[in-house]
Length: 138
Image (cartoon, rainbow, N blue to C red; front, side):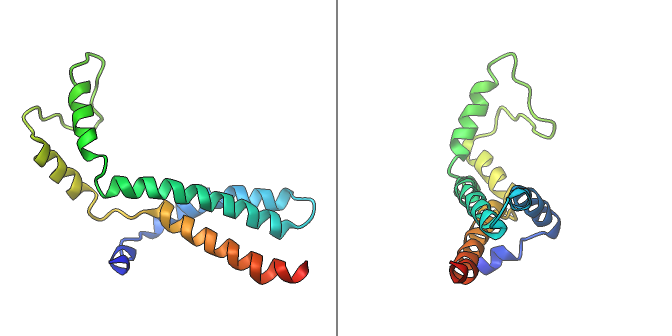
């Protein structure tokens, strides 16, 4: 199951996520006065843990845990005058919850959880760097 999901990785979004998430650790390492590798590892660990939390929430979204709430929230918001649908969103007032849930499931069929993947990767890399390289110098 996991290997099947890894086939959904697209290089363009992965590179974009890598650039954005590694920007802070890189700046932190370059601005550190001493022990640059330690500063980089600490920043990667923090970013990795934040990505793990975001990835778990996004995983819940991908599994459909918030779908029925979204259906009733959108249906309730339509009753207000200020509600305007998103550009590609069509409002079908006769759509029942089962149809709505099936549409959402089809839309995210090939989605990949980049935050969770990168969070796990960053935490593993930081553990390897700390125990592999930094333990020897202390």
